[in-house]
Image (tube, rainbow, N blue to C red; front, top):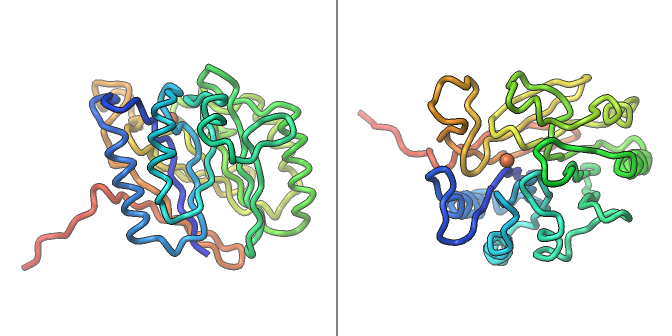
Length: 259
Ligand SMILES: [Fe+2]
């Protein structure tokens, strides 16, 4: 089974750029590359920050762009999204009984859970008691089947002070929901705009660069808070609960010189 992970598109209104880059061009190129080389994937996930400021025209652009995209695409919200604007643009996306944009998908390999970690118009994430109850019920329903979790905010520090300040709040309460569920195979997250691997409480976790701009590993290594580094999407291969993640820098891929 193959799936594709993209994150942090940060789309802006048509005609605008963001940090000197054009997120629409980059997202369109990534989606074209996925359609060209990975149309055999079972689905694609975009794990939040679909837009930079919740602009309705940015959501509309994504609606139009996904119309002819060949993969079923699961959409999530991030701290840069406006939940109400997202729901208006994508009314068919499942929500839980409290209106949070979180849902489950069952495949023949197991269960995929897509969480809503948005707190509101702030950067840090939240996973409140209502959402934790939803997750506990989904994990119970999965029984011993393998589970993969997608969430925008990581529930742990990754060693970047700028990002660690705005991770998921109350990570211990979140960890308690997962405790005892050894069938959780992997957590995919976004938000930190970097390629990173983490092993957290025995669970493997990966993050990807954003589609537009990145967060420099060393704050002093560039003059600006964000950096221009290659965007990547993740190609995830799952077989009997084994999980492989390839980081594909499709916009920076090219032939080498021969001879
Ligand atoms: Fe982001």
